[in-house]
Length: 333
Ligand code: TYM
Image (cartoon, rainbow, N blue to C red):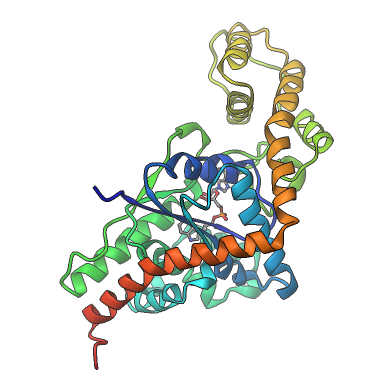
């Protein structure tokens, strides 16, 4: 039986953090044995903010290294750079013909960007979800492992897929669905309690996979807490729940249960909990950081992985684009 097709990508902007790891990469690693997986570095998507041309390659290579260091096996999946698949921009162009200005302007991530960078509201930013749909539909994927922040984009990908199918009278693109194995990790919050952990906001409240041990300790010891619950079995504030999720991931159930009981009995000491979390996070991130650093020293090896990944991915994208062209009527010779 053919395995189901999976696609997901990570932008090559900045350093990867625990949100990327827990919301996305951990799922990739889990899926690689049971699905036909295409995972890529979204370098085209990073161009919306005009990165320094010299920074592009090290950024792309670092994302590849951090994925592999986290357990992704390039023998089992196609791991490639988005810009190595010319079929993606071609499908993006086709889908742009059925993406409407009004709906694109309403996308919350677009509105955020307009607010954050009013001097650079370019068309690439507006059509960001169309490019993302092309990334997914180019392999006719059915499952997409992503964090909560990408759900709206997935819904748009489904809309573009059905619109294409309706217009050209074919059951050509499946409707891709969000996939996740753990509902707790879909939105890892920033340690200061302000919104999600992100590559570009508040580096002091973000744990990067490249952070050294002391930096991890310092950041965790500064994480937002409060004076603790006063009623037994209270609901946890979201920033406390977030620390529990991180504890569960890094220290396991037994340790987490001890602190959960203390919380429920109103005798939790957040200082102790943070010390425990700091140490378990140091043990959790350390091996990934070391492995990623080692991989990045062998540029040749990363180049080979990307080339082979692109070959595997192009075998699939070439078929999709040839059929899409036919359906549209670009079929002259
Ligand atoms: P990006 O690069 O911002 O993030 C990569 C992945 O990490 C997840 N993520 C989080 N998950 C939980 N908690 C957080 N705090 C957190 N922060 C980030 C994201 O949900 C994502 O899964 N547009 C995408 C890249 C992309 C893509 C695609 C993804 C381009 N084309 C096609 C899937 C399919 C992005 O900017 O992700």
